[in-house]
Image 1 (cartoon, rainbow, N blue to C red):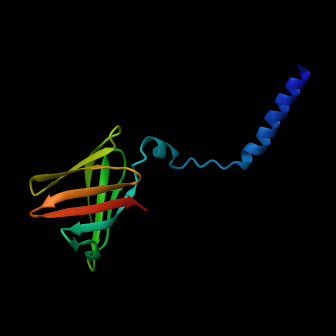
Image 2 (image 1 turned 180 degrees about the vertical axis):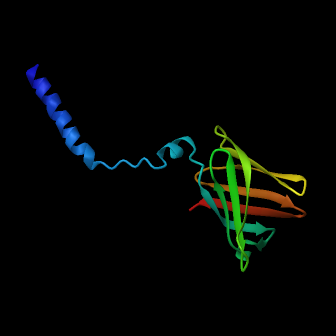
Image 3 (image 1 turned 45 degrees about the horizontal axis):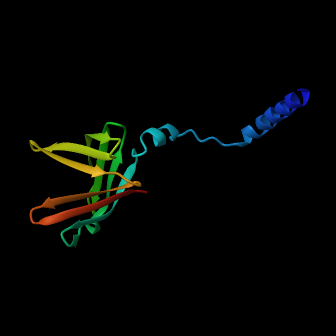
Amino acid sequence: MKKKFLLLISLVCLLLTLLPACEINTEGSIKSITHPYINEYECSEARLGEEDILEKYDFIKVSILDDKELEVKYKLKNEETRSFKCDYKMNEETRELTAEKGFFGMKIGEKVKIENGQFEVLRKIGDKTLYMKFQTK
């Protein structure tokens, strides 16, 4: 019994000695577990039909700010940065994000599935297809 007690005390002392040497990073750990999709996504590919439209922009980014709001920022070359915010809903089971924004009395919505830190937008505009691929940095 005495040997088991001494072994237990030795083990606790060893853990107390080694524990301060371990670095625990708590920043963002709750977010990464509960809402891993909250991040900034940058457009890596954008085409309208066969035309590469990404070359006209310095950047196009979607930042999911919290569990309710996201922000879209973009900058055309030689122009200033523009942005807008909108609310979104996330289906945790299907990983589908649905966002909607009103422009000139019309509501434009988009539904995307976020997987492995990326998502794609595919939308028909007239007779052409808009394709955009976003991924985390």
